[in-house]
Every structure is written in C-alpha cells, then in structure tokens.
Length: 430
Ligand code: S3P
Image (cartoon, rainbow, N blue to C red; front, side):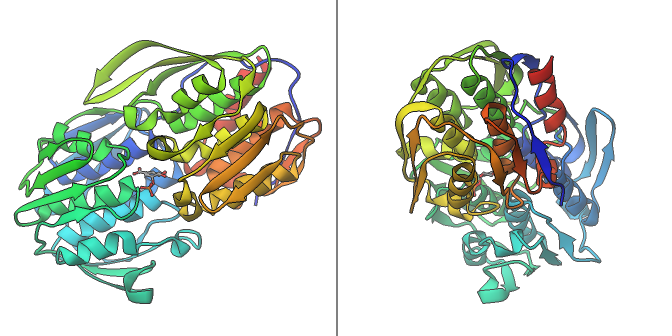
C-alpha cells in the first residue's frame, strides 16, 4: 500500500509532455513479434507492470526478447520454436495479457497453466474460453473455465464464425489470434466497433486478414514476418492530462505523438463537445497507426450525453470524463457502459464513490452514471481500489480540490504509467 496526499495547485496546467507508449499496442507488438520469424524492434515500447507480464509470458514459452533502454528487440523463430512452459504463467493484473495470451495458447500444441493476481482472478475469462473452446481449444478451471487459474491444452483449432456477444477488443483479439493457428477461415463480427490494433498489426506482420470495422476474417497464416513497430503515445494515459488542462482554469497543454487511431479518440470528441478547445497538429501514420500532437485549452465545460457507438472508443477514459463532468455546467449522462463493471475493478462504483467522497454528485446506474455539475470538490479521503485509472483520475481531481485528496494506494499506477507523478509534477509546477 502506498498512500498519497495530494495538495491542490494554484497555477494553470501548461507546457508539453510526451506520454508513454500505448499499452494495447505494446502488448500486441510483443505477441506478434514473438510469433513472427525474424527480428522485430519495438521502439517507444511501454515498460510497465502489465506489459512486463506479456514479455515474461513469451519468455517462458521460449521467445528471445532483448530489452534496451528505449526499445525492445525480439528474435523470433516462428511459433514452432515456442515450447511448453515448465512453470505456470503469471498474468498479474493484466486483462489484456490474459485474454490475448489465451487466444495464442489455444493455438499452440502443448499444455500451459496460467494464473493472475486476486483482481484478475475475479474477472471473467469465459468470454474468450467459450469461443476458443468451440474452435477446439481445451480449457479447464473454476466454473468450467470461467476464471483464472486456467489449464490450457492447445492445438488443432478450426475456424469459427463468431458474433461477439460483448463489446470487447480483447475477445475479438483472442479469437483472431486463435484464428492465426486454425484450419480454414475465422470470422469475427462486432455490432459496435472496438479498438482495431490487433487487426492493423496482424496486417503489418503479413497475416492473411481482411474485412472492415465490423467484419474481420483471418485465414491460417503459417508464418508472420517480423516487422518493426514504433508505438505511439497512449491516448488513455494522455487523457489524464487532457482532463487536467480542461478543468484547471487558464490551462493550455500540448501532448506530443499521441495515438489518434479512430477507434480510440472518443475522448477528443467528448472534450470538444463539452466545450474545451482541442487542436491536433503534426498528424502522421506508421504501421497503420496514426499519431499526432494534441493541444487542449481550458474553456468552460458543459454537460453532455455519452452513449452508443462512442463507448468502446473511450471506455478506459470514463473515470476521467466523469471527473471533467463534475466541473461542467448541467448534467452529464453516460449510458451503454456496462462493461465498466468488469474492468480492473467495478469502475462505475469506483468512479462514483471516489469522486462523491471528495464532493462530487454522481449517481451510478446499471450501465453508466448521472453526473450533476458543477460541483466544488472539497477534497478528503478516497479509494483507488487497486485500479490504476481510478488512482490517476483521483490524482488529477486533487488539482482543483479545496483541501488535500488522500488516495489510499497509488501503487497500481505502475500498471500502465510508472512516470505518472513526475509528469503531473512537470505540468503543474513548472
Ligand atoms: C483493451 C481492450 C479494452 C480496454 C483494455 C485494453 C485491449 O478491454 O478496456 O484496457 O488492449 O484490447 P475490453 O476488450 O474488455 O473492452
């Protein structure tokens, strides 16, 4: 436990920052680099507790991964060079490692057992175990393989035609990764488009993958070709500082080289609709991923309705959007975000409870929340519930609180953003 008391700031948020590499893209780069033949260099790779789990998982399977200061090099020899791990694989707190690795392990012809930390152990795995079992993977675990720890015996998969029952990029990715090893074609259909980094990177690595936003088809790709990856800055990490600039009067902040993949930029749309000034410059594309510089200028905010197709485009940003909404004139309504209940913690409850304890007026609903603005945040004690995004959201809230915000435990922040407090300090105290 690492309690932290954060005092309010009296000056605007200014300057510029380069946020760390995108977590989703970093995980996928290790996975595809380890399955490919040849050397993959990943620059601006996110070094954090979650991505370390994926690196270590592949090392246990025999992948040769070299870590340098600013990059990671994978000397891949194709999936045939990977082998049965001697020890159980530890997924830690990482839902992305767990779900995506289960897709890979279902395709590899050997036995693996895997477990997670107490938080991940409570999160549902049947969402990937079910389709991967239909494809031919053998899983066993509590409640018919619904939860970690899990035992997997992979190999001999067949293609599947799968309509996603949940809005989840992790499930889509697990089925597509299984599809890499399956006989025939695997087709995934999603009602609401979710982040498409897996499809984009599979294409860059030469997989036989086609389709549109909602309809993706992959055919057994015997070999992937090693491809260098430059990881853009994580928009989900940048979101905390975008929100900081949006709620502290007089602020103007630039975030450099942030990922601008359309399937992730819901936060930019929300900020503009709420009234903040957002401008984007120096847009570039590499490996199918777009990135650029985002500048946020503080303006008075107003409440809005957030629902429907935008939800997966900002799912991880909802806690910090709720914070912005506490500073907006009028009500903000969030609907269709029931998936938040299944994240690192129940993020509907954690957001409402965390912010209400320091003076906000938020009513949790089954699939979202009703946030009544504008509230004066008084400060006080709040719980992060071992959820990195709740801890960072509360730290940003402290900037505008009247008294200190005391967060029970900020150690979870290392899951996605080990340098968070240095960066917060840089933009608030310079
Ligand atoms: C992720 C997908 C999302 C997101 C998570 C990362 C990914 O989860 O919340 O932080 O990298 O695919 P779901 O697939 O459960 O929506």
